[in-house]
Figure 1: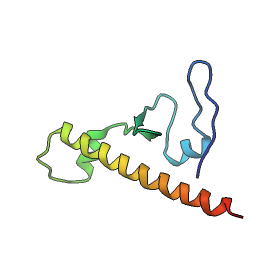
Figure 2: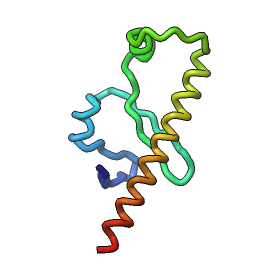
Figure 3: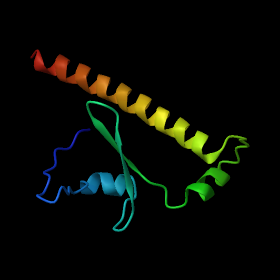
Figure 4: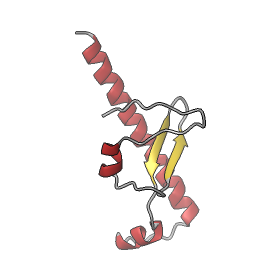
Length: 96
């Protein structure tokens, strides 16, 4: 699903209510903007990332920096796959 939003003079946008609800984003929460070259990805930030990782019960000897790099690479890969699917969808539906 794509959403078109307007950017204010101050560079602000509003996250659509449907997305705020789906990703449980509330006032004061943080989101992460990732520039992946040619487009950007917006990800909700975990309120307590360490607690979230601990709840997964994963034993990992990597540093936090290494884990962050892995998360960043995964986010880029996922956003690229979604961008390609959206482009195919637009191409298929523009032929009609």
